[in-house]
Length: 242
Ligand code: SAH
Image 1 (cartoon, helix red, strand yellow):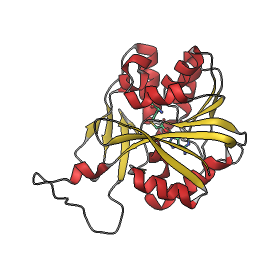
Image 2 (spheres, helix red, strand yellow):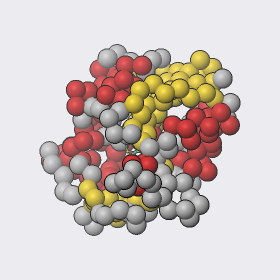
Image 3 (cartoon, protein in one colour):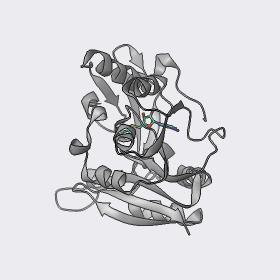
Image 4 (tube, rainbow, N blue to C red):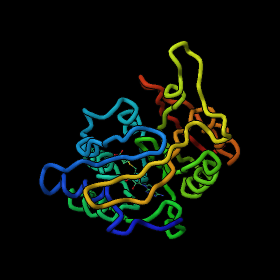
């Protein structure tokens, strides 16, 4: 669980590296048993401050002190924070993403899993952006994700995390909801990323609505506050010690 990806199963990292080195990348495919095949625009992972969604810009403005960017990807947020003179450490389980971040000039990069106990310092701000609750995988694991983040949080620190309420996906035209009652939370999806011949392992990814996030936070001695809502059922939350 607390490991990093092997190089030959790191499709997103390979796409990021291609984009960095060649200025373009092939198709980064996103497969799911629940949706039609999709594609992730690799360019989006290289977005600049002005192209970021309002919720991300807000999170960057609120970030202060020692900052940890969890699942930093191509480093777009870390680079922006650095350019503002802020102190940020970027971590990711994708070895190629980490190499790309170093090449792009992110000063403090570590290829490590958030759940790895060797990561042990305290941070004033922990950022998890572009659906940060995803890392939990399933609703049942949200308390353990938050409990882990709490260990890394300075006493007056804040976790800034975004997600979406996937309820709209299941909304019928008449406004009623058609949610599978198989017992699992409707915001859990499964994904598999593929880039050319590089196939990642399938993984679970959680979209948590704010109520679910807030109750998981409360179960860990944390309190969650809704900072802002986006235009499409998305939101930014701030979580702090009670
Ligand atoms: N934050 C970036 C990338 C989001 S994609 C952006 O907004 O552009 C999610 C990232 O989280 C991926 O790069 C993935 O490799 C990383 N990730 C997933 N699980 C992780 C974990 N347990 N620890 C650290 N990084 C993780």
